[in-house]
Length: 449
Ligand code: HEM
Ligand code: HEM
Ligand SMILES: [Fe+2]
Image 1 (tube, rainbow, N blue to C red):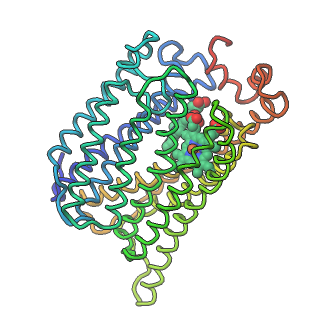
Image 2: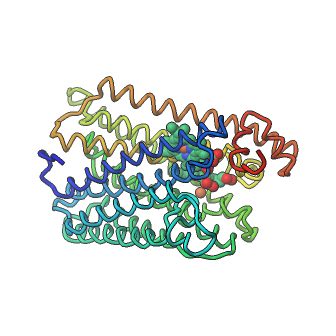
């Protein structure tokens, strides 16, 4: 790979991570498309790549590309923040290849083997059957080693170089991020216990550690792209971190309403998850306020008001502020109270929220980081938006918004027919099948179709 403008090995490694991430993002969309076609044409690729397999590939690729892009982002910003080259970069590169090879093998097994016998061999060598993080156990151990190596690099660099607020937050956050993965690895045949721990990874990742990561990246982006004052940005960061952990950790109760966990989770989940949108409002204000303030300062000095050094990246960072707030904050809040969740649980409404939240909170800012890498790699002083960046951005944002609206409407019809009118009964779900989103059920329960 030609990296002529990059002096730092850490930044080179970051571009490798971003390249794999972008490729997996493409794969994610491809398998999402297959699953979507199967909604309308249930026979499409039947017994070749069934809905269950396409869906698994779609959402596992989602998680993995985001983790790759997160590692890439950290390797990208470390030399800037610490003022030194990343310590242990050779190890970092080796782990990158191990990670990429493991992911390739896992994906090939998903595609070509798909299912195994219902015993330990499947868990070890095919997949674990845990939504979003289905990697078989051999790969789980590999991923754990890779994650520990990554955290070690981050720590060694942070200890040796300048430890900014951003780096300190990332150090704490990434330890939690790696540690939580372990809670999704062990086996129990009690489905309630299994779900209880599985949410520790899924929920505590996206609603605690990943959100804190986004706060740190947003802070870095604001300093890099518009020259925001570090003191102000890092003050916001600490406020956001405490609010995110404060609400996100016990907010996990919103997944403990109906899985057999004690009923006190209703109150805990309701209260803390209802507070979760607050830090997202803070992050929204943070980005837009700092931007406005910097422009005002430039204006007062008689300079041109636009001080953005990478417009495509900045566009994606602003989209992140909106998307995080809407997808996670508003769409999440909609169904987070047990009184509402009783009706919306497991309907298309969940999918509407899942799409807008993952896209709005994470895809956006990670694509933004990729644009920063494109700029750095090619030695561009100021990166402008072009027709193709504007076209691409509008198409993908328009697509996700369109999907969210459609899924929300489908969610309403689910709620009315399968829940409000007929209760959560077998007849209710059968009746729901005859509506516009009927194929969804037929695909999921092929035995009935
Ligand atoms: C960026 C952050 C977030 C992401 C990526 C995200 C993503 C998701 C996804 C993918 C699901 C479906 C999980 C499944 O397959 O069962 C889900 C469920 C849920 N989310 Fe979020 N979410 C985020 C933040 C929030 C917030 C802030 C709230 C509340 C204010 C919230 C409330 C819920 C609830 C109540 C459910 C359960 C839905 C059900 O009953 O099936 N989420 N989330
Ligand atoms: C070409 C665009 C896409 C298509 C056609 C598509 C289609 C689908 C389909 C058909 C499902 C299965 C829903 C079900 O279980 O009934 C799904 C699930 C999901 N997709 Fe997508 N998707 C696309 C893009 C995305 C993007 C960009 C993201 C996030 C960045 C995303 C995140 C998810 C998540 C989190 C789920 C699981 C939702 C849940 O079970 O609640 N998808 N998608
Ligand atoms: Fe959650």
